[in-house]
Structures are given as C-alpha cells and as structure tokens.
Image (cartoon, rainbow, N blue to C red; front, side, top):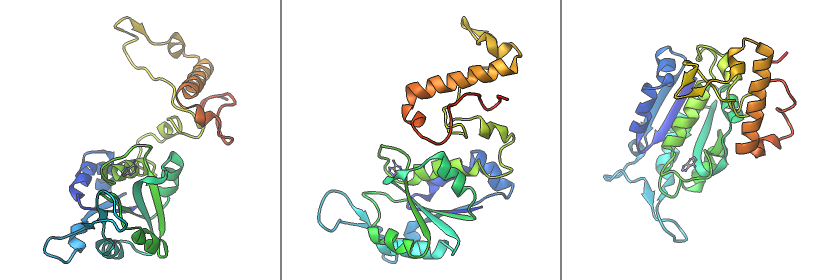
Length: 240
Ligand code: ADE
C-alpha cells in the first residue's frame, strides 16, 4: 500500500517510524511519504491560509496549494481522506475497507478547515472521504491521520505477527468491546486473576469472556448493542 500525507507539519508523521508501521515500511509492505503543503505555494511567505468569506473567527486554508498538492500526489486509484471534526465517524469497518485500497492520500487541514471547493473539486476526480475521529476538536488533521494510518496498516495482510489477535479485539467481528485480559502473576497486590481463566476449560473460558464483553459493552457502549447486524447472541470467538 502507498500512503501520502499532505500537511503544513509533515514532521508529525515522523512518529510512524517508531511504531509498528515503521516495521511495515521497513519490510516494503507500506510506502509512506509526507509532503509539506507549503512546497505547493508560490509566494515569498509560503501562504496557505486567508480570512473566511462571510466573516467569522479564524483562518481558512486557501484552495490553490491544496489543488496543486493533490494533483501532484494523487494518482487515478487514490482515495483522498480528509480528517475533520465535521466528517463521518471513522470506524473499524472503514479501516477494514481502506486496508484493501492501493493508495491513500491524507489531506490534513489546520485552522478552521480547507476551502470547500478543494473537497468538491477533488470529489470529481477521486473518491473523497471526510472522516472524524470523534466528537472532539483537534488542532489539525495530523493526529487523526496518524490514527487512521495505524488502524489501516495493522490490517494489511502479513503485518500482524498473529492475525488471530485481530479477531478477538474490540470492534471485531462480534461487534463487542474486548473482554478484560490478565497475565502473570496469578495474584498481584492481593488481586486474583479470575479462577476460570486458570481452569483450562476452554468452553468455560469462552463463555466467561463473551459474558464480560457483553457486560462491558452494555455499560460503556450500549449503542453498539442496538446495531442490528452482528454480535451478542452467545458464544464468544472461541465458542463451538
Ligand atoms: N481534525 C480536527 N478535529 C478532528 C477530529 N475530531 N477528527 C478528525 N480530524 C480532526
């Protein structure tokens, strides 16, 4: 997979070298390139923003550098992703879908956002997805881009050491949050690992995990249980 990121702070993307994505890059599974939006300006001050038409607070990103940047980095097969708090919520299903693509281009806005014509024009040439990480506001799209990249890249075939861990995590195929997990020692600060997990009874362990996952989901994310599609009819991932 190829991923291009356009930003006025391309150094944000250096963090990708540290993470698992760094390994994917080293192994050739992934090529990531960060681009400085200011390299697509032509004035002495490398201006990327201006005051909003219609008035109001803050600055808006001008369309010209964005147009040139996207022309330069996005080929015909690209999906252009624009992180913004006004986007559709980004979910695990989106990560799964995007993991099947050849080329992602992440356009990281700052300030009050990018001139809408950039998105409208790009939509005539590429698939464009405006996505939000959640109901909160970041200063720019860079952190969101890192999150999207990590969520997608860990799903690339050959990336995870043990692909089964993808099956059993939160937002996996059963639609539930993940059950609590424990490791050694069996007793720590007086707190014991639940007996069933040490029993060796795989059926009982699967049932316990499924029950805890349901309990946790009901408490923290009841909205997930209301979705008609997957989950909750009994039997965890390991159940017969
Ligand atoms: N940019 C600013 N806030 C954001 C958010 N919540 N999600 C994605 N991109 C953003």
